[in-house]
Length: 255
Length: 260
Image 1 (cartoon, chains in turn yellow, blue):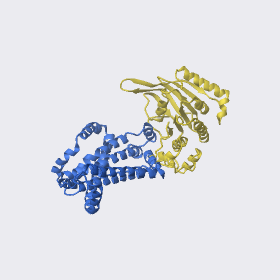
Image 2: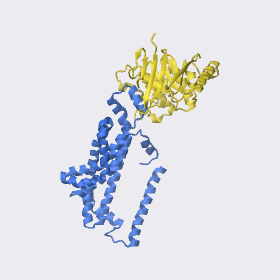
Image 3: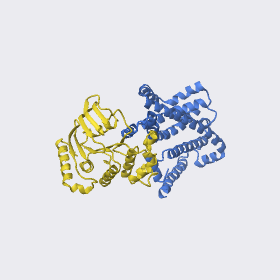
């Protein structure tokens, strides 16, 4: 069976003119279809760069990246991306923001009539015609999530999507993300710097260390689903979190 | 409501104070009326010659609006070209900036020599004075799109054209409107200067003739008309801004504070 994501011997270098920065060094990673993977690491470990390489937003300097068995050459329609900020267009309503991918690529095999159901799924029913600035930060990020899901991608890439939210909203969004993922299974790669978030949501946690960005270890989280915050008292959760924390401390950088 | 009331009361109080000061200066220093006329003399002159002043104000407004529109029609595409092509940017931007350190109004007589006394040279002078803020603000606006916005566009596989129409241009509009507001004020200046150089009508021409005959009352009446033109055009641009980018934070904050 082909892997949902196959990364092998990937390097990424940035040439600033004065020096060459090795952002990622010899990254190899395989992700199964419908697996939930989290990538954690301190700032500057290249985790966001890794996401951009998989999304086809920038080319790797070396190595191969395949999504669904196909080498990544640029942005692909089968991938949904959610960024750190919601990046909603303020002149478009909630519904129009969600439909943006369909407006830009009308040939996308997605149904506009499903947009209502999608908004319903993230608890935005009744807000279709509101403008982004009328919504709270959490609601804006939900709209962004809908926009990433509207083309029904098989792979969802998320770059610290809840980083700017307050702790309470963030926990709520974590559980919602799990619910959405369980309702419509897809491969998810979540970049985060929150150990709790990573261990709570992911099947596997990829721990990266900075300068140069390398994978230190992959920590499995064999907790049953659906998970809620009560799993935080589970020894499995505790052990996994401690392991991730120890790995991050060992690389000399902790948040 | 309270905010709206105070936004009228304070400027009104300041106006009354200034008028009082005007009367006081004339009264205390015994200023002769050919140097500084009484406010009511100016008011009376405006009422008496209203048709005459209004006609000339109309001419100047036409030049101002024409030159302003010309600035938009040429300035915005110019900015788009500069942002879109590194070659044009590198070749022309230094000259464009250099041209702004030059006093453009000094070109007005030359333009009158070249293009005569019709409407064209006046539009050109107004354009020269007013277009630069539009170019600069449009350039800044088009370059202001944040990294994640551009990455979103890229991830959605937007074409170059879509990138412009869906993302860059709308995101540049707040900056463009900031430039338009500066530009429209400049355009009034440009129109008056153009009429100084060679005209047989318009407020600029009226200023010259009133000056020659030491008719200070008319001078003040014309200044008042210019003030009205400037304010009306400024608020017209602000009204347009309100209609085009109601989503922008500056527009929304202005609405929330209850004043224009």
